[in-house]
Amino acid sequence: MKEYDLVIGLEIHAEIDTKTKAFCFCKNEFGALPNTQVCPICLGLPGTLPILNKKAVEKCIIAGLVFGCDINEETIFERKNYFYPDLSKSYQISQFQKPICKNGGIKLKNGKFVRFNRIHLEEDAGKLIHKDDCDETLIDFNRGGVPLIEMVTEPDLSNSNEVIEFLTNLRRILLYSGVSKCIMQEGGLRFDINLSVKEKNTDNLGVRVEMKNLNSFKAVKKAIEYETNRQIKEIESGNQIIQETRAWNDEDEITYGIREKENVNDYRYFPDPDIVPIKISKHDIESIKKNIPETYFDRIIRYKRLGLSDYEIDTLTDEKFIADYFDEVLKYSSNYKEIANWMMTEILRITKEMPNTDIAKLISPESLAYIIDLIITKQLTRNNAKILFEQIINTGKEVKNLIKELDLIGDVNKKDIVDLMGHLINENPNIVKSYKDNPEDIINYCIGRIVKSTNGKAKIEYIMPLIKEILKSKIN
Image (tube, rainbow, N blue to C red; front, side):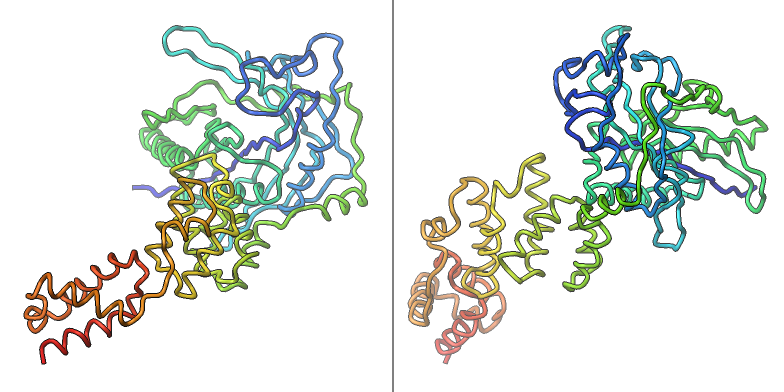
């Protein structure tokens, strides 16, 4: 059995987070009624002229800077010509000869540096909607003209695990830099995979096959695995691999051919006569660089200095809004370990149960910090803290008012414990007899009853020795 290597390159499209589209003033927002965010410019009607969105150019430059790219001092826009129903102009305004960004890349944990060939700015196409109940296809042009960055890698990746690690880091870097929201379920981040199979230890590259428009990491991993097996079976059966574009069927988990793969010449690129060349000075680059937010990697370094573990850091930084909320809580409490624990348990649970909800509106960072400090100073048991947390989420009431209302904090003295144990033993005299044979279970039983009787105010570490003392005295 022959052994094979994979050669994988990626083309990643990320919608840029701007208020308006790339070449007109239509809103760049997801979820509007079909064909309500369009105008003569983005539809390409005769006599219209594109107006370049400066903010989109700046955010493309930011992407280049955070990925370590070289920024071209002059960039041009070109027309990429092809006919497809969702492309209203029959060409796409894109970049080929002089993209905004060249080179750069991302380093993986295994030391491999995955290189970018280019990062350029272009406009998105509309969206085709295939109706299941008939043979009709509808078109929504709202997405047409939305600014995209296309990030093209060199074929440096060798397996699906490397691809997922690369894409995970890429998504986080874009999020933290403010370039894109990267909402995959809305089409805000999409992946094309160029994959070929070659015999191990040979320089003869296989035929490249492209898989288009994957929009989840799960789909990317499964598509790579399926296509690898498909190509190997074809090769070992003596068949030729066809250079083609294939689509991914998420339900059946297979790829299928949709058309022969185009070559660059098929697109007939030429400079767009309606958009002048763009000059980008060193002063422009330095000015943009100063306004880049804290990067993903800078955030990791800061969290390591706090003493958080790699697992805690990876969990907290996976979504920027979680890391931002964590930072807000840190402004009110220095108990970062306990805050991280609550973020990874209670806060992440709530965000999964209630997606697209602003967690700060459910419980303010100051309120969470207050709860955590009460736990650390042993004024509030963990069980009562969770009760308090749920009540805040469900009622929206202020934390200090709820503490009083629920009577969660108060002093439980020795006399209270002696009285409660007296009542407990009077109700169940067998407790004392059973203690001789099974002390651990009886102590735990008494602790549970007393904690419940005091609404959680009795601290286990305080009442345990008292319970032991009382039970021993009854035996003697």
